[in-house]
Length: 599
Image 1 (cartoon, one colour):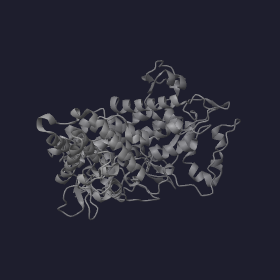
Image 2: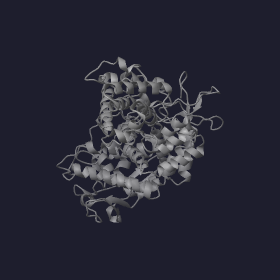
Image 3: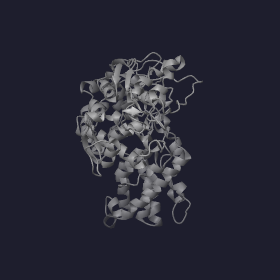
Image 4: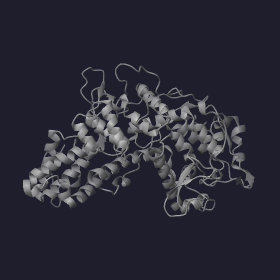
């Protein structure tokens, strides 16, 4: 660790970039990031895997395993295992995992910390997706390229911040002096950047950096270097959770109030705590479930809560893939970049409205007879009701054959094919993302090439080989009949009554899908069946649980996840109540410490 700022080599009157990055908790930023798990228990903590069986008490089809948010399209071998465990006595919780800020969380945090709207993390290396989400702790690795990205972002953010130094400082340096004002800045800014008060050692190190800058060029440089150093510290980039001392020695510790504050803010806002939440943590006012609930309700009513809800659904519904969807321009000439953007805007506006303006229920998300259109989207869908350049809420007539999220062009395009529909992909999506069932991987000798487009046959006819070939039918009976229910919608989400001159057959069936099982005709009927399913509600809970805790549910999570399921069911699938219920679990307030470490 660089303890003495005066020892830095000078480069044009200031420390070299590599040295400036090293002020933090280890000797260099690379070590800071790569060795950061030593600050808390990372490794593979919290993961109890079970493969090839039932999980969470959800029924599965023969040869089909249950797993939250993932399934056959996620290429993961580890499934959630929330087998029953004792639900009384001391909290039963999984081991804590050290979580780095996701790119979205980084952008939101520097926005709220510094007022920066440039979204610097968009230039960082892409995040790895695991179990359906890009914030999973065990998938977070730190490359040299990412380290350089953090360094460059910190330098740019700090340089921009000190351009308005007076607005940044909590004091007037002309009144109390530059050194004392800089010290006040360190305490105030550090509390917000680290989401807690600085330790004496941290404050002393930052004051050393400040003093070097003051001696060289003055207060602006000192503050700039302090911001750089803090933005590259593991205590900014990671959500460090150490927990309280463990007097019983059973390994389960309660998180400190500031750690709970961070859990609240990053779950509900994808960003840092605000002053109200930090003040509550400072005062020890996050010590009870009622206190946590009160803050969660306040935060859920804040517009920033929309960010987390949209992020969850964007990932769970695979909508982040939309900009990169490849479609044949001759087959789909109207599927332009501009339309892609509008399709995503439609779905985002719909999700926000359902969750925050309507009743917030999963049923409404799946079956609502309205959407949000502007003139271009109305023309693309061949729907009446909108003509202007801005999105507006539009009632969907029965003849539109649309209702709910599964009929949105954004989702249908993501789940489409290059020149046609993709019934297998659409069927897998329903089973994995809405029912949490995982289709076993196909044999090694299977040809994955879909049947060629035949102008003299329908897609359903072209895929009929899957039902007659016993090698294929064992698995495809769970996928294809579901995907065929989407056949009224082409590969880019537009309705069609005929295909190649033949009437479209959109009849389908959910086989061995628990209480969702049965025949249906078309996506609306499928959506209604899913909307009434307890298995679908349980699956949504498991997905939110995974997103909230950045890991699959483990054996020790059984009590917490069952508690959330009960609330979600009792509140008729209210997504807002689900989020609040997550904050009331033992898993949210406690963690199991890794031997030899903190929580």
